[in-house]
Image 1: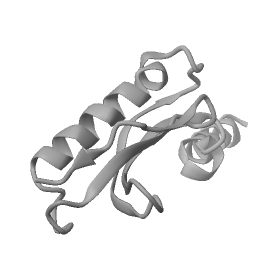
Image 2: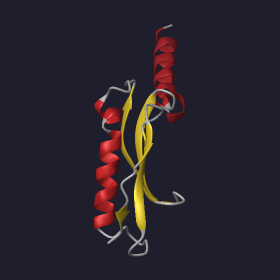
Image 3: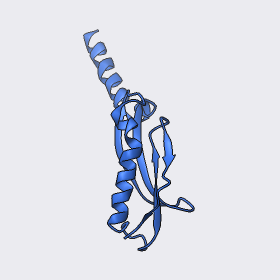
Length: 109
């Protein structure tokens, strides 16, 4: 009986830790630098995540500001392999808490 209980606890723990199970319980702050016209993605980041957290959690509440700062710095450093002079805005998604697209346009250096 003891071995069966221990086995169930181990198997249950493994199931609990899988991404598939926690997918609905984990929130993530995702950010994209997208073109200012057609929103073609230049670059994406996963800024933060939390498990069992509400939309008021700092990782979600600050998602938009963190994304805006990330894209601003990305533009200042040339936007990677994107053509110099391209225009970009941020697009943030805080796992259903809030999605936003920036209005301020940044020019890739």
